[in-house]
Amino acid sequence: MRIAMIGHKRIPSREGGIEIVVEELATRMAARGEQVVAYNRKGHNVAGERFDNESNKNDKPFTYKGVKVIPVTTIDAKGLAALTSSFFATIKAIKAHPDVIHYHAEGPCVPLRLAHWAGIRTVATIHGLDWQRAKWGRFASTYLKLGERTAATCADEVIVLSRNVQQYFKDMYGRDVRFIPNGIERNTSVPADEITRKHGLKKDGYILFLGRIVPEKGVHYLIEAFKRLDTDKKLVIAGGSSDSSEYYDTIKAAAQADPRIVLTGFTEGQELAELYSNAYVYVLPSDLEGMPMSLLEAMSYGNCCLTSDIPECAEVLEDHGVTFRKGDVDDLTDKLNALLNDSSRVKSLKATAADYITAKYSWDRVVDRTLALYHGEAA
Image (cartoon, rainbow, N blue to C red; front, side):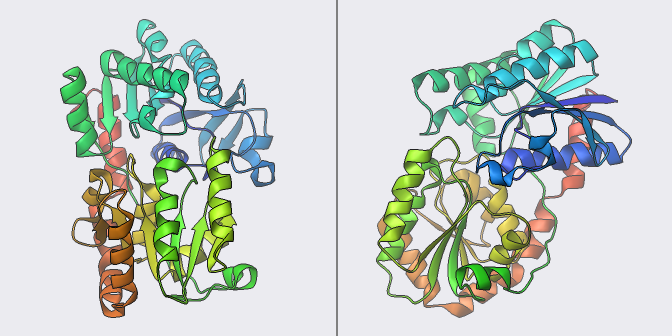
């Protein structure tokens, strides 16, 4: 089967959860013998040019783990990158006439209508209700909502990552969509080495947030709550900005007032593995999520996780983690303080996290169900 993937920034890349999902789907499908083409945006890594790899630097088509990767013209500016890259990718894909085009995220779904008119089967994965994100202005939010509406009305199949968003599509558009959550594999913990040399971090010596530094992730709640705590543990904020440099600057300013707070910037590779492996508690205080890959990853390393009680996080955790009321700094402070003073509970949650999350979410099942949708079968 010939499959086109559109909507991610680049693969291989850890610029966001969508990139991780597309890489997993594309490479696993290629390993099963499918012909997969992924259309990459041109331009630098959102975290900065120094994090560029072959996916940024290569202007010509290349092959990555059996996937043909084709860079497409991109206007690398806020609000325009997704618009332009998805349009030009769609034009290229229509010319190649694959069996199915799989769009990822709301904004890139706007040109899906062109593929629909061309008679190509289309599948759209809505990774989250992106138009709600605080970083976008009125024009961008309107454009994202148009992509959502296009997917709901034109796509042959729509995939969502949470029951909450599945109900939203039913209520808003009268559309039955497919709930296919992301997958995860078990990760092996590694000792603190690089993070000790670079940041002075030791096993169980810090609370960890890892993700994009954007308003909807709620990092400001976490910093405010942490400053109220009487603890010698550090707070590590790991991640880069994404079209939200002003917010990132406010986070840096807030962190400077407390020497216990460490900002690592964008992280990947060995440093990323060490951060996950040695945290005392992982915290995700988001106001808005699709299905947070960082939470799945944190649990796959055996972390005790504390998240906001939004459905997209609570569905993942069930009773294998701790939640606080979304946006409630007082409740977040109380829950963090309770975990800091109850190491036995933290150890208990850590002991079951990896087994639970890897049994619940499987990439093989995700690929099976997605390929079934491509073929027009029940997922």
